[in-house]
Length: 272
Image (cartoon, rainbow, N blue to C red; front, side):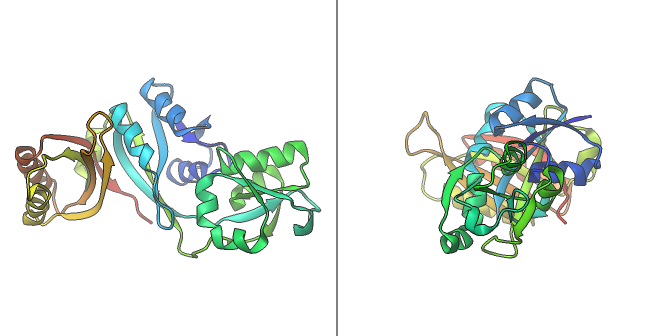
């Protein structure tokens, strides 16, 4: 099986791929979420791994739209603790560092540390990509914010450990695919759906009441503007449920009160 990830080996997406499928997993490296999702859509890879939200920085909203646009299915999820580290070329001291480069989300998660050391910040497409550049080009004035695994792979020194603003820093990743294995649904305890409501008073309240009536827990709700319809929104929702029957009955009832509804996936929660 070929697994597509955003980023390269040593990235947090790579860490998730190894946790789920083993250290020898075959990886297709993509430097954007769009390219990663397209690789799954075009069947270049069977599975894709996509970060969707972080406990500090919040949701990665464009990724919901990518999944929706390509009609991909969420077949699982996985949570990992994100421990950011400041990586440098061997022999480099903090006084030698002029610039720090990393993914924008890493900057958001380490903003307190970055304020303290006051260096030039340069955004990059991936945390591990910066580590690789420092290693290959022997850069001594640039530091990367990346994982311990990235330091090991690219032979860099960890100058500072655990520089994230909050120690409990988790990212939720979804596993996406074009196809759904029927066996996944047998173990399912979670679903991700999207619905669009009219502007009628109480329309969202009706949806929430239906969900509550079936003893289903709404674990996330995210509104995203519909580009073609100004001031109209899609609601992306995650639900956990006691039984698949409860969820199916709930979904059928939601169809009757929604202008449009779509199921992204029914899957098992791999939360650590």
